[in-house]
Length: 212
Length: 212
DNA sequence: AACGTAACTTACCGGTGAGTAGGCTACCTG
DNA sequence: CAGGTAGCCTACTCACCGGTAAGTTACGTT
Image 1 (spheres, rainbow over the protein chains, first blue to last red):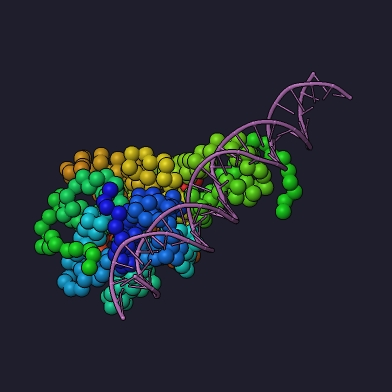
Image 2 (cartoon, protein in one colour):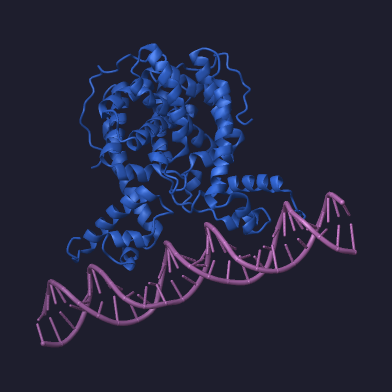
């Protein structure tokens, strides 16, 4: 136990976000109690309410922070390059995030509280898919495809990467990050039909942080 | 309100499974109470416990039934045909299930109870991915690929179809089933690179029920 | 009609967890 | 040192929910 010490408001707030993220990640929203969060932060319950108002407030703040970091990283990744390079870069950023921020990743892939039912799409990943969908929509129109089906592809790709990330994390990352990125990229880009026996050569840049 | 009427054991059990499925689907596991299930079935709490022992028992029974139906349908679908045909057939069965059994689909894609932590893999979809992975493993070895990466592809494909299904259902199915199947199949088979402008001709059979 | 039993009920216990009222304490400032 | 205030705590309330004990009612069978 660290020495019980008074923190400033912002410091305590940041610590609570961190602790809450860990707990929501491992237990899920409903199964995590504010009491637990407070205890793990070495503080009493009302402090949490002072900072975040309610349980959902804490959850929302955590999700928003994670979302921003991830989306920011992905936006940077797809800013330039060929279509394929941008695709690979996006996969790389996503899986890097899954690796380096496992708790944040777990929160984003888990269920949200039932009450926050924003416009039918409840899960957070849907939000990400929608952002990708917006990008696709533009590209599709430009390339002469029917833009109405853009969300299908956006959701397919996001779901693909997400599920791989979930499996990879749950399994203790049995395969190096770069290999996973290459295989997923190969599948997304070339499809099952033209899978290369060893998908390696692709001018892949190996750096890329997800959080700002 | 229907006339309050005594049912036989099996009848009541079936009704409780149905009611429970609906509630778990819309609220999630933790946020659904047995009292709610009992009330919606027009019956008192102990009846539920008589049939299923505990809350998790009811949940497990529901999940198992849904899983069996879905996996059965998919097994049938991939029993014969070329690789591509089997792939398309599997996608068709999966999305047909999402369409015709929305509640069951929602239960399967939602979070599971935290306590049933079977060896790290908690979510049900992971289970499905594993079954697909087993199939892939064999095919990969046969085709001279590294079987260790088979799960990557299995999870990628399952995640792809799942997320499309979630989006499609949440959005009120804005696109006909056959179109979604064709686009997803095209992406999975040919990749982003060789997307056909109108992925239609493919000898797709349009029937296929998920449940037995 | 008497009986057995399957279906069902009321009424409770114990525990947990969200959220709050009101007070205490360390520290900075004049 | 006086006083304000930011950070913090104890001690509740209230509601809900999982699970159970014990008793009641409908109904087919002999």
